[in-house]
Length: 113
Image 1 (spheres, one colour):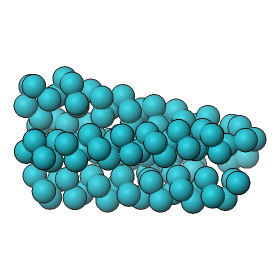
Image 2: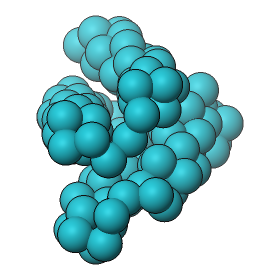
Image 3: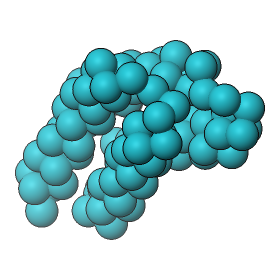
Image 4: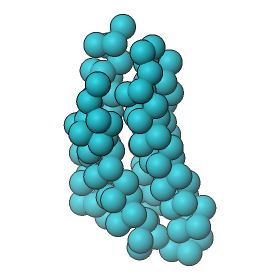
């Protein structure tokens, strides 16, 4: 079994977490401690789910939860764009990472069925 930290999806999600910390840094106070903290928490939970999925024989339920998690993250990021907390450029940059993680989770889930 591969070390979870060597998994491409784990590395991509870790990069997403670093990106989220950068992404939320410039939120106004109103959003920094609500949506910003939620984004960080959701992304950390996603990393935990990837770790769990890697250690389990039956992965599909955990991977489904992880896919739901990435959609929550995607939603929160979009809300922050619509609330004008981030530039379109930064929104696009973080969304590329989100899409990468999402595709990898989908592929992993399909492969483990």
